[in-house]
Length: 254
Image 1 (cartoon, rainbow, N blue to C red):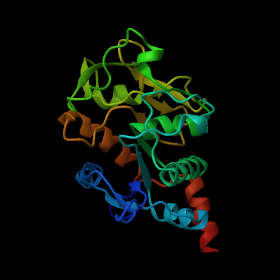
Image 2 (cartoon, helix red, strand yellow):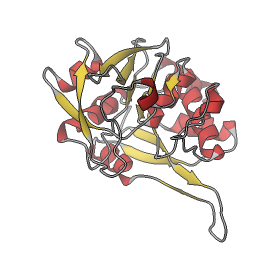
Image 3 (cartoon, rainbow, N blue to C red):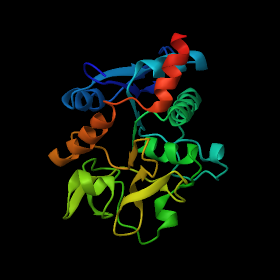
Image 4 (cartoon, rainbow, N blue to C red):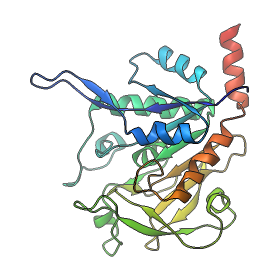
């Protein structure tokens, strides 16, 4: 490719209510870190038509799938809701699912962050814990309702992409979640866990497809300077188009 990689980023959505119009917005950390990593961010609104989404994906070199303060609906995954569940608007969830599925089918490089990591795991055949406190009664704290700069230790699996990114030694990352990966999807392997056993990072086992999922947030102000290396790793993967994406683009051109 020539020029900077173009990176698609999903955004948040709120339906119209009372006298307020429907709107979309995005944490500026997503496009700031992509820009700092040498890419050009393009925001993806919740396209209603699959053909429009496919055309969008034909324009980009990689996709960042981020989550938000709200949850993907457990019922859509065949799970029971939990008192801690706060479901995001249906239009947002339906679009995120389509985005993740098409990115997987096309083997576009993906950086899945927070809730996006959870969703990508489900789309690829994995499952989730609906609430960590219930699943891990003795788990360390993964969310603080008052303090949004909570941090905890990560245990990185040797020989993984996470090991390549951070190197040896202890790292601490920010944390703000109550759902988490349960059964890991077949395309992935564990990249890092917390000492209590919660999966905090995974990566693809397919050498022809870059997909890194992180439960922490390298795009947030509460991230450390080292976390920018996650963005850098993703940006390097976006510099070369995958065979599936080249085939898709050639087909459209014909």
